[in-house]
Length: 254
Image 1 (spheres, rainbow, N blue to C red):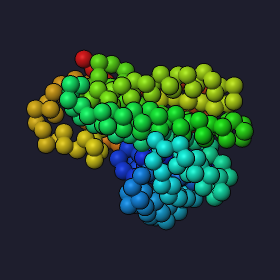
Image 2: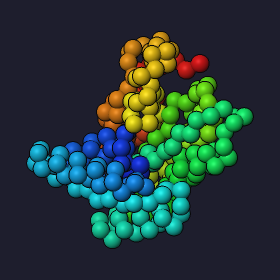
Image 3: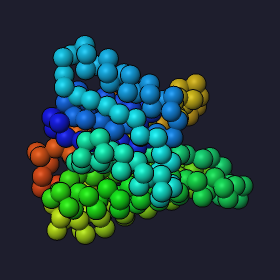
Image 4: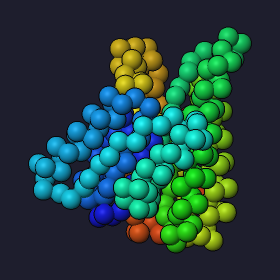
């Protein structure tokens, strides 16, 4: 992976930041996308510290953009090409998770979930996929969810709909992009403790319910996800495409 250019959306915190650190440790040039400049800069700072401490060759840059905005995505892509000339790997990680029952969910919250989680992946894949085609190949990983593959989650209709769509989008991309030597896979995490889900640790009833369905008897950490993402983007996964792989401790969705 050394010196490959990797663009990770939503890399300012949580799973996205963990993925960025993993790629940096592998010696890649990491594009840290986020809509929040403070969190994006914090990730780049962590990468810089990591590289300095370990003597690695990774590099990082901030790319601020709302992935739901086509012009912003295209501008971000242009900035990366100006600096590093190509994008070898795209990780569509940016996501939001509004809560609320179907009968009470606000239309704006629904639209925002679909725009960021699904349309954002489409816009980034379309824009960067074009340059991957021209350069002769690449790898794309879409961060979906086990909620998009089973019965879903209570009060998360917009999130579940967007992640279900993302799994289907992954399959179609893999089919179309195979001719261009571009592989596309989805990673489907279970309950991973990040800033978005940290409240679960304070809810004993919820924790007990989740753990009953997880054979490993623990919730996931961001680092539980990063190794699979790195593998799927490496040459060692060259014959893997169109797959949606769960990372969930064996959780049974019902």
